[in-house]
Length: 486
Image 1: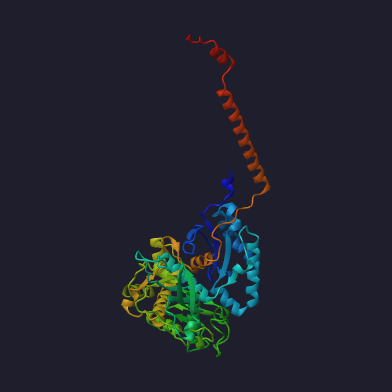
Image 2: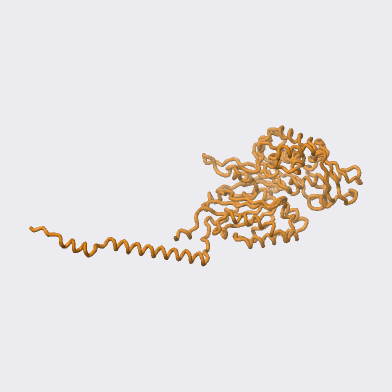
């Protein structure tokens, strides 16, 4: 019975909320109590997604209900007696970083509501575990995830270090590039290099994050560029070359302009009325506008402080995993993770020439799981990915694309910054769980069972002793046996 009170070496648990710009995922991880060279070997135990809305867009009064479903789901994934030992983290990413620049007070109120919700859960919680994480922390954590899932953080059969992969992470509101480097004696670059120790080995990782260059924010910048590029400022009907013919929608001025990613225009653009966008299926114009978004000085054109100025380029021999929206767009196009540049551009050209009615026909005929809005956005998404890789990160030739692996998951585990974040935290956690506290009722039950076992043991002992002792008849019988006469 005493063994029931001793915690097992397997497993330790951790919960992390990945609060992105378009979603919030809650992932439960587990790992053996004994770490390998100081680092936990994580596996994914559970995953819960909140409604398709980033926490930055949730009213402060609704934060608690927004998180409730996934808090309960995470608790259901973990043995109840282990909840008090399970540390919980909440990391808000680029959506909240943008809101922080725009309205720091609202961000503070949202985080206070998050803290209140997590305090009321049964997890081990500290206020410092709730934060808006920096772009560099997000990029570094993504790099750790990519290399752990690809088993490049441990030595090979000869004991030599393996070559690590670079990581490209395209989110809704930001873009990250990360790769291992030798220490560089350059103050500008050194500010972007972060050291991390995993499985007993130290890595220097260059990571740079570009706020406002996620795919959702890029599309909004594209719309702003279309509005500002009009010849007639009194025209509120805007041609959109990256969207299909037959598709149209209205957007308010305030939904396009204002904020860190697209400031208010420096010149008068014809009032602040709504704009109506019409798809035109013009791939050549689409490519031109999208490449404009990638120009290092484009940020000045839209009055934004956030520019895409990469400081350091990776070695031409290094392989990269491109995940998040990179992987989702490739999956949505029904292409392999090792797609060639030629096949990718051919598929994008087809998407950019397909009108809205035909997209509806395709979805209905093939019963696709993709929404029409996703299909409508693949022309822009494809060209944006091509421009980022080619114009910004120098993956310009077909041979360069052979070094890219587009993924959303590896071996059934989602590729995201959250895995690497939790792995890095295991370095500082206790390697064994504390002995769980026992409530009075459970202790009483256990004590009763223990006493009953002792009583049953005593009864069995005395009964056995009684059976082994000779009876009076047996003793008398023994004395009546004739003795042998000498």
